[in-house]
Length: 433
Image 1 (cartoon, one colour):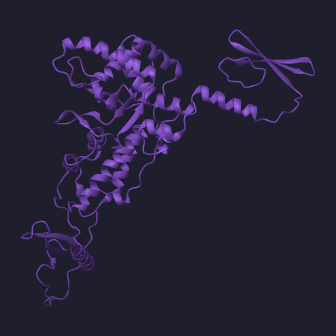
Image 2: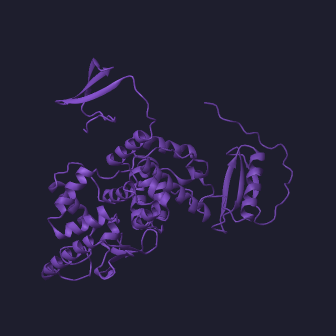
């Protein structure tokens, strides 16, 4: 292995003396390097050194250093030995976001960032290293949303660090984000949704919980934050103005809504009835409570219900309903919004009920096509097809598990075919499957 030789400067003439604080350049004969020595911006009484092979490189660095210092930008990392894991841990403790966002950031740091680059020095982190991390996560078949959160964490952390002068260079400025299509959860199919709802009606509390979640589309945290005082029985309205969230170090706390906008939703007579029955049965249960928080859905002691308890209650409901799919509580909300859209409720009204800032959010992330809406679309296609005389008529009859296709030309049967029973066919003379 050959090492690059650095020629010592021929002239030993006295160099032009720089003013105090402007740094200096000199040649170290032992290290065979040019050294730039400049004041430490964070610690004025100390000096930082940087080594170069040529005087031109040293002078270029010193020029950039003085230029950056003049506009308040850092040239050296405040702590050049800091590891990525320690840096992100410190950054995470200062982040001010919603509790769910904080938890997702923590998951990304602990599970997807630290295991790969946590032991690297922050000062040594390059765009190539970060893009390599994305490649590793992609090979682990992580979802698009996981990679997106990882990118968001790193981008936010290094942007803050560069702004505060903790690092001299933000590697994320040159990182190419890996775009991987995520697979968002969909609405609960009608067959399963009906089974869940019917099972929920056996318990007034579960009935009210599913009504608010799967029919009205209210977020889980908002449901757990409801108080009886939020319901106006006379005007038949319910006010959504808070959500219940678990915050690390604080426990269960009431937080502002995601969009920070209070919304008042109308209630139907049937919904008033469902909530009133739940309220009456809750009065009986109060004899076992240790406290009354005025909540519509408290825990067994009358206190705020942890989201884990709500989750377990939902899973027990799925099992009791005979539903095998592992649906989440949030899919109740998607089901409600999808039902509103596919049954003709306009986008603006649906977005208002859902608590979205824009109808585009509703349509992009929540509205899904149902089998009924697809059938309606086929009916529209058939209705708008030009009426022409066909030379070949087809009749279909079901024989056991198969559809019998009988082709008839000018009144005479000429050919018979079989089709799988799960094949969807749309024609004027087709019997419904």
